Image (cartoon, rainbow, N blue to C red):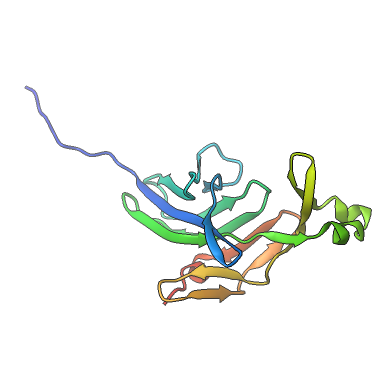
Length: 174
């Protein structure tokens, strides 16, 4: 006896697009690492348009979500509600950045502070530095349908270079 069935084994997914504000314009950010745990093998990177899709295991119902930039800044969203076999579209995610300092500002820093700087360079030319102990802004920009919302309800740990916020804060567009 042969029995054929139409069983679909699928996965849910989390998707979205990473953007940054540059000269009052929003640009897509490629190569942002997206995962449920830091340093795990199951991750995706945003494509050239800043878009990503991360598959969800059917066993997950709440999880932390991590976004990691190439310069080491990590955004952690705690307690993201996950539904198996469903899509969670995060929309456009405006990524924060480390504080940008000029070469003159860099030269005034102590030796220890200079260790926390990431050069902004093109080949051998250095244009400035990202100071990884501080964020560029004291708020995060949440892209909402009607307007952008500045949120300050987050923490930043300069040692781990991690911004932490809860799902309720991240998902607070009205």
